[in-house]
Figure 1 (cartoon, each protein chain N blue to C red):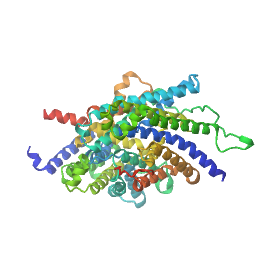
Figure 2: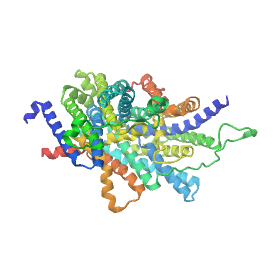
Figure 3: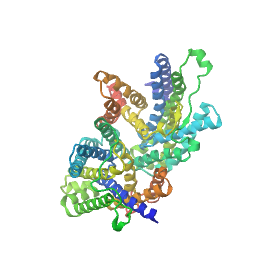
Figure 4: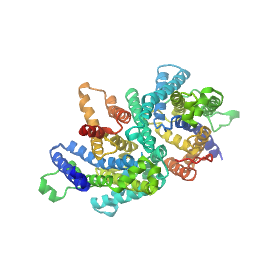
Length: 303
Length: 329
């Protein structure tokens, strides 16, 4: 019974981070029609920046905010320097067909990932680093009993919940959020009604960069930091996004928690070695049985 | 040009030239570069699998390294457990990986673009964990030891003493030639035209009577067979294990195919040579700068990534495309 509760708590905190990763992927997918495989490379980079600041003696919160800003800037740079020129040329040559328009940005994002990982390796020596937590990460003990979670776990849940609330409010209540929803729904109509869709796209990349940097900051204390550590998180986040339908923001969050629980259960009750096999089977099952994600609307969609 | 009348004969002519050039080049190089040339020759088969899959039929796979691993384990297990010869083992590697490609193809035919990329990436991560799951069969993290063996005596009497690296090269090149020939013939055949039609416009292809999903699955089968052969040869250099077929191997094949030119055989050739020799080239060019080891280790990755980005943005047809335009002017 105790193991079960611990597993559920572990699954929930990890799931919260996966939800952020999936959210980042879905934001860019809705905004630009691209799955950004470099996303956790950007997060790794901004987490290294935070870690360097902390080592230099700055406070956690200062480093935290700078990392989020770096995430936003990196996201915008990826769009402005690579994706926008790429889509601008998309009518020519190799990019002339639908299949290649879907494929080439994937390859470009892998190129970005390679560049970011090499740069991080050059700058930060590729040594594995720990990363601090802002609050204690030993199990809390209310009423003298050991609870199955730490203050840091609670911190993760609160930060992620706040992020989701802010994101929801942004999309529902602000003009820019409305413009982003319009662009995701139909870029052509959005453009005709006066929305500058290329600006909206860059903003999607920047917000996605913030969400994934936040995920990087929250997951690194339990995973250590090296240029490649966050790659696996991206895979889980991708699966979570597909489970949620890839174009649904609430779906991606639910998908993140489902994946968190699934992985925690496999880790505890089966074997950590089998996590990726389980992930593959789960992903294939979802894609074959519910290709539009678990929360698909009736609209038929070609995956 | 009269050669257009008989593409098969023209392809054969070019492949024979390629084989002769490699054999002559291979005899004069030092063992290290013979080994590198052998790796080019092995990876070329893998890059051709990307040329067929992505360049010709428009499907992307980030799991070609996993299919290479399937070929590698199939040949290693055949050699170690059944005691069959290397050549038979390579044939079995092709068959087994093509069957794996059939399974993958059934799932992949339903997926496009990023979905396919993500799914094959998960596959590439999941498959190596089988090596630990069934450690007694696959040898766990350590892997299985196999090698090319010794060159046959008729080869030694024809060429004189042959080193191990040179034998790797000579054993690989005939198979690479077969792969080149097969690719050239597929590209200029009815099948190749159907694949290109699917890539360029799926609905139009389907209206013209091309069975889209069957052809997509077939592409995966052929491409996987190529990847399996490439992986089997790659493993025969010494070890078949998870560390020999990392995720980065899939990305290396993709990078090679893109840099050289995704849609042409010449591009595959240029690309495979480029990705294998690029680290050596960079090391040689930066030697006077006396870079620290840390920077030297990551420089090939950085330059490779930058080249990949520049290629997709500025010249998506790759190096072969530039050469082709130049020739036509």
